[in-house]
Length: 418
Ligand code: HEM
Image (cartoon, rainbow, N blue to C red; front, top):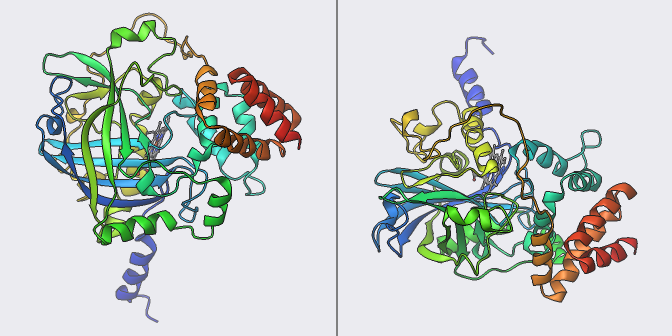
């Protein structure tokens, strides 16, 4: 063995450094290329270049992910699933990041690390500890709506083909006349939405890659999944008169008042040839916008504006925009689209919560909207965890559940005593 054996050192060093770092969240994922077809010209609402002409075809790449995961997390586990898409338009790349639950756990980005840590293992035992998560909920009543989604059957999805996803945050669309509207994005699976029960999800845990394999094999057979893009649009003038704050990421907008309008169709039709280069190295950011789409004053969204690129500089290096799948060669910071209106501030700035919080109404509405059988699953899924937490935490959470709906709280209380 010669110390100067450069061939050996290069071989070993190449191997040691070839694995990209994991994402801080959404570590496990699956990806595919596709084609988006604009179904309706949206020029009345936005100058976004790929939404101007019916029939326009835009190449895409999408990545499905598990929000709280490592590379071995079972696909069928109770989790938030991500669905991110890059639209390669003739005028630049537009990213749309979605989650499979319509609301987020917190409305202030400052609480994101605290929330994510409570879902990970305890620092001492390295084991998941329900007390950590439920003690967080007890100190974050705004999480109750999210919890009501996550612990229902909607938290365990049958397959990626059946995945319904939401932009969660509120963005802005701007048209050629400069008129701005609030917009929320939705992807509806053409195959319909289907969930698993907790028992089915536990049974599938022994096949950790079940969803990824299903996606890969379906695309290989020429039967890739399809999703329809729809949007809810709101005149910002409505915001003050609503009972909820439409810029609060813990809230949904009424679909009766703000109907889902069809925009186009996405077909995933090509598997990656090189997973590491084409999926693992994808760099998505909610700030990767094009003229016609802007940030709103949604606090959580603004909190997300810089962190993704920081994460990618760490994980992929400063040249992450030159990686072919990210295709932003020649990008300069002045191409960044932000909040179109800008804002003037004067006086003292403070960190403060929003005024219209209303942490419980929509959680109660969601509970009442479920068929009785699914309510029972939700009650049991929460109760089975509350049985193992401290009395103080359990009673606070049960109080919140009762504030959302008296039956919801009462039934979980009964089941958690069983
Ligand atoms: C303050 C709140 C949030 C913070 C600080 C945050 C932060 C992050 C970070 C650091 C990553 C990894 C990025 C990378 O390494 O490429 C990530 C991934 C992701 N986030 Fe968030 N996030 C937040 C909220 C949300 C919300 C509300 C959504 C809902 C749409 C969301 C959807 C996603 C998705 C889908 C991914 C995976 C992207 C991919 O496939 O590469 N995040 N987030």
